[in-house]
Structures are given as structure tokens and as C-alpha cells.
Length: 130
Image (cartoon, rainbow, N blue to C red; front, side):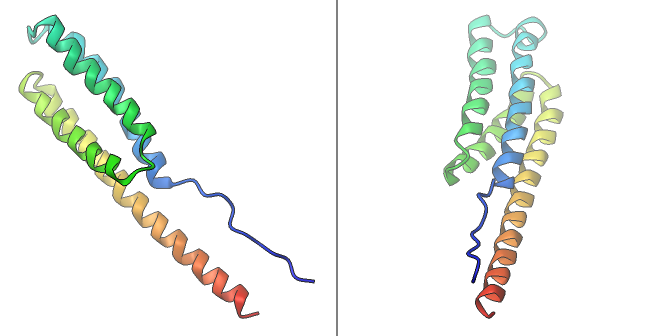
């Protein structure tokens, strides 16, 4: 009697790590809104639109990471976060930190997924040769 084994449902480590970065970045970008208003002197409407708009974009994008295009949009968000440093200078630093975290999560997640697929392929080949 042979046992049929199938792959367990897999969670994407890439998607999980990138979503975590986006959620943390959403908090940071949301907190830049009052800083833009009180410290940088940005018009309230503009600050709300930019700060909360980027916050909402990060949260929505975290949920869309099943699609490959969402990762490219994630890189664009990182560029905008760095550019926000023109208004709030601390965002140069924070933007670079989040860009590094985003890039690391993306690249490490891809590597884990490749290695996981190779391990499953080797296991399945071993099972087929028995």
C-alpha cells in the first residue's frame, strides 16, 4: 500500500516579509502627516493627502502582494518615501531604511521560495524513484 503525499499549502515568505515592511512603513508615513503640518509648515490638506494617501497605499499594497506588479509598486513607494525627505528631512534616513528593508525582504523571500521549490522537486524525484 502506497501513501499519497501532497505538498502542504505554502505561505509565501516573500509576501509575508514584504507585507510586514509595508505595514510598518504605513505607520511611519502616517506619523509624518502631523510633522508635515506642524514642523514643515505644509498646508493641512496637502499633508493629509500625501501622508494618509501613502499610508493607505501601503496598507492596500500589502494585501495585493499576490500579484507580481505589486512588488514593483512597492519599490515606487520606497522612492516616494525617500523623496518625502525634501519636506521632512528625517524621511531621507527613514526612507532609505525602509527601502533597504523592502529590498532585503524581496530578495530574501525570492531566495527562500527558490530553495523551497528545489527541495520539493528533489523530494518528489526521490519519491518517484522508489
